[in-house]
Image (cartoon, rainbow, N blue to C red; front, side, top):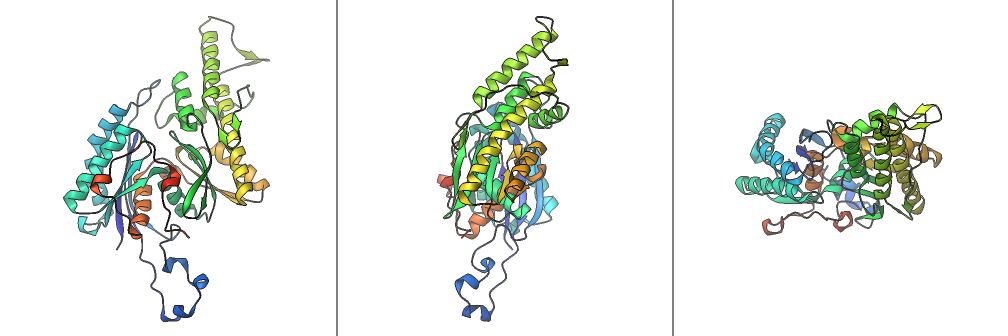
Amino acid sequence: MPIALGLEGSANKLGVGIIFHPPSTPPSPHDSAHSDDEVPKSQSKPSASSQVQILCNLRHTFVSPPGTGFLPKDTAAHHRRWVVRLVKQAIKQSKIQIEDIDCICFTQGPGMGAPLSAVAIAARMLSQLWDKPLVGVNHCVGHIEMGRTITGADNPVVLYVSGGNTQVIAYSAQRYRIFGEALDIAVGNCLDRFARVINISNDPAPGYNIEQLAKKGGDVLLDLPYAVKGMDVSFSGILARAEEMARRLHAGRKGEQDLWKEGDKVIGEEDLCFTLQETLYAMLVEITERAMAHVGARQVLIVGGVGCNERLQQMMGMMAADRGGSVFATDERFCIDNGIMIAHAGLLQHSMGFRTKLEESSCTQRFRTDEVLINWRD
């Protein structure tokens, strides 16, 4: 009964998940006469899209005050305070025994150094205390495999968008190949930092609150830089310009200069949020479409915390529909960082014989998506 416990703590979300992969159906004697092409994949390798059972998916978030970000030392302290009680709660909620667990999976990178290390220490402790093998998981691979499983996407181009990463990815020859990425800051980091400038709440997430403000805008689209460089994107210049706009807005409200108007429309935070979203997401749609054309894909899978954004999903859906394709995305249970995606990807690795030695279990903030051998896929 393959069961894995997964620990995620690469940023301000601490996640603990427990997953069960039903055993593959053993081949019948009649299958021996079939060619390799005729043998179902589930009989030779575990399938990320086969039915899995999520026994538990718990999460606790470190929320910093409005106008601030989350510092690594504070985030790591939060994870240390909560990890043991979340693990205990997960075991109880899953109604399993410690003996039932096959492996302890943890995020080995990429992410913030201190939070990653805090959770890795917990994973090592559980591994030694319970005598279970460790499996270090790439954070992005966890997002992709969970997204494929939940949505049923077959072989999509993946747009991975979060607070720390922005990548366009396609699978080839047992690797997730990066076709394009952010050259400076990630799209989620751009949104988070803009949220601090306009002093909106970090609860439940700054990007979510920007999205809600943007829904109130739409009457005017302001000018922002548009920085697509081949298959790559750049967000730092856009953020700098958006911050200038916010300062102009606040100066007008304080009476330090005239109110900012476009025609008869007085500009507000909702217009800045709408403009920022439209510009950032148009850039992401452009490079995703280019990757689809390159590999001949008709599916797009959006993963990562920013993937929850309804406007991003809508814009991507319009592009895919024009190409006769479709878009797949999950809700906040699986888009936002969670422990179940780490348990799922880790159990896939474990089923292929992968183990992380204790002396090789240190975390890295720069763990490239294409470094991982995806040998559970053909």
